[in-house]
Image 1 (cartoon, one colour):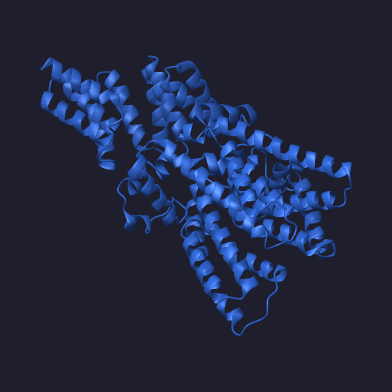
Image 2: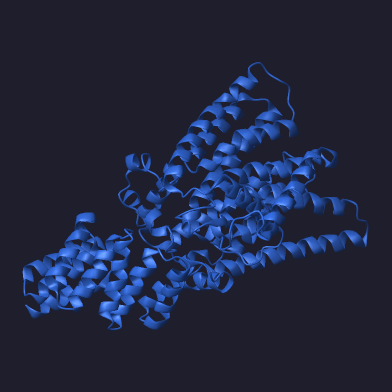
Length: 549
């Protein structure tokens, strides 16, 4: 058996090697700005707001606190955020190694499990997406709490029990997934027996009560913010999700941030009847798993308990946006499957002799290398939003968010025809997707089709899904038509929603300059620059204005 420090170094180095390009990654347009560097709560280091707000559907104050600390040092530079994610993931992999050592005496099982966790492609999303921080942090506290609880079971010392409780309580403030800790403790009790002590069962209520409280807080907000499908559809989606996750952990092919459900959710649909049958078979195996061994049953139950809270996250954003899976939702659950894979490899290794041992070892090493190379290549796609979303489109073209993001990037690069093509694709898939329709209208106006562009944006208002940028784009169109009074009124509506919106202030400055209201124009440009220092347009406009004075 290699020394423990050698195993720890191996896991740490492997993690860094796989995610070596993470510091060069950009932010993703999906969630990163609203959750981290662009979040007003994060920018102002407001602890009170962090502990009294949602994200928008999860209660994650410690996650927001981590962003606040990073913003103090890195502002809107993504490198620091990505390095933090890699470091937390590395620590989690080391915790997996230490935790699994309590479950089995076979030294190779903890090492292989930790290596799989560190380098498997299915965890790339949680690591490379800044918004995946809540999954990383919650896993850190969950694994730390369980590690100390296992230490308590072995040593019998109450200190470890209470330290585990403290970490559990902290974890609840990162993501509600940590509520599974008391359930995992039950299967750990069966795996690591200890002498019963007075009031031991009563002391577990210290975990049960806060877990139930936080679960209640999370579910209330979830019901308010997430579109609800029928119970039957939820069960069918859950069955498909479970089997899909298992398949992706064994053969991680065509990974994506989005797995959108594009066919009817019906029992007669082969997409659901086959996973349902497979899941029933898996449940039967679980019921019989005691005969296969306690460790086998433990691995399956770890996966089942950990994945259960995330099965309710399938439907978001409306009837047109139903997702059956997300890679980061199995960031903790995958440990159960990796543990079973490690047990299988260990079983074959220990029953091999001579040359067979080297062959099995070489195959296991090759499997780890394949996973590591896949994860490394997948992380490269995450370096820029355009490259990643184009990758998603190549594998899942019926994903409106990906089509929209690529369209936005093409719009920034002034590739209007390509941008409009992607926006139209998104609208064909999701007609109520206001972001796509608004920017389609903007692209039309920039190509000279002002009336058509205004008509597209007005459709958003008719559907009552408008956003502040709806007024901004309408103002842009009316400005092109020379209708300055209408444009100014629309921009003032934006400021009534967001008093320091940089784009609206910049456009008001342009209108004021056109009407030769120089002092007002100067004030608007200065406010726009103060609101968004990185935007060069108001700076250029202000410089031009000052030169002409």
